Amino acid sequence: MWPFRPTLMACHATLARGSVSRLDWHNNQYHPSSGHNEGTCALSALLYYSKQDPADLWADELKKALPKDIDVRLHPDIGNPAEIDFALCWQPQTGLLASLPNLKLIFSMAAGFDHVLQDQERPQHVPIVRIIDDTLSTMMSEFAVYAVLGFHRYMPAFHRDQRELKWQRRWPRFTADTHVGVLGLGAIGTDVARKLAVFGFKVHGWSRTEKTSKGITCHFGEDGLFEMLSQCQQTVCVLPLTKETSGILNNETLNAMPRGAYVTNIGRGGHVVDQDLLDALDSGQIAGAFLDVFNEEPLPTDHRYWSHPDVVMTPHIAGEIVPRSCAKSIAANIERFREGDTVIGIADLDRGY
Image (cartoon, rainbow, N blue to C red; front, side):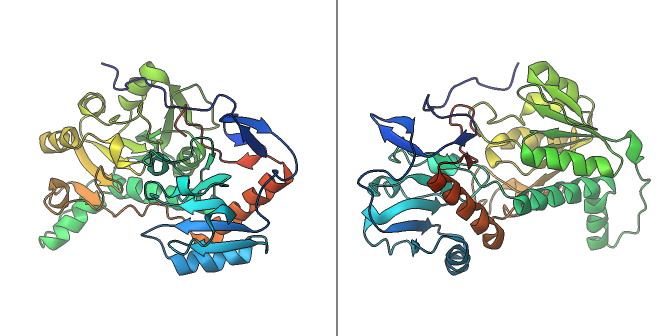
């Protein structure tokens, strides 16, 4: 059975896929315009909201990068809500964004934006901008390469042997015969695939729609998914989380992989059906899993992943949003917006990325 559940997320028909020029809105629809909107406040501010990121560090970097006429405000010190044109947020509290009457862009503090959609009261007409940053892509690729090479050279098993005082050699796998699949061929997934190919692996990539990438065997659609999984001794998930990709690593797809395969997930926790993965690990169908993201974060202390001998875990750190780099990306997009140029990274709510 095809593991996706086709649905469409609400999207504004007038929003171009992946980009947007400076916008006005009337009757909840986008209309390109030039110059400043009538009635905007003389002052302009960006509101920062996150309960888990270093606010002071972000404030310092934003003040360095942003135009001097934009005031940086850290929640809860909002000041006059009407002066806030831009919001930079991670998991915004319900109603916060709706309380900003002149909000023009919502910057997600992530490559994805599902956390923003959790606020059902957010102003639907305000575009959400994903973080697209070379530093983030590099960090994600480094992590994926580390995970794949670790499994390839039995590092988790050797760490376990060390704790148990065992001296046990293992015969290395031949790299040129090892197939590695990457789920998701966006900017980050493509970077992951290309960097894995440098090591000599036979690298495959899967996407919902047809794509090509030099040196990568590309697959797409339902048939392509299972065609790829059946060949790959390792699979790395770098997909965005949508209602269609939720639970893609499930009993059916895990059992489509060769017995003894390895799985790395640096996409979102919702890509994994936890019990299905645990069953596959217990049976030996999956030899090991490297998990950086989880359905519930922080992961409850009674979850079996903590103690499972074939699971390697990290606390959602594969790709960090680094203020020093990302503040410059945000500032560049604000300048584009003000000049009437294309804003990079506008979220397509219909496609989910």
